[in-house]
Image 1: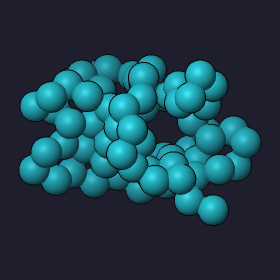
Image 2: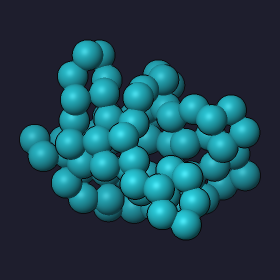
Image 3: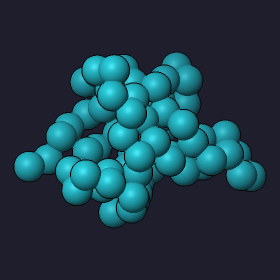
Length: 73
């Protein structure tokens, strides 16, 4: 798990929908949210970026922190 910076849409709540993230100095624009679910610690997303890669990211509400959990092949 790595901390990342996320640009997100905040509608009726903060961090409603991620739109892009920065990981290892590179900005990845999110093309699609493929899956979204909620657990006790916060929101989880499987996203597809413009380059076609898929990532699992999460937002921990208690710690106010975004993390990259997995890069899928």
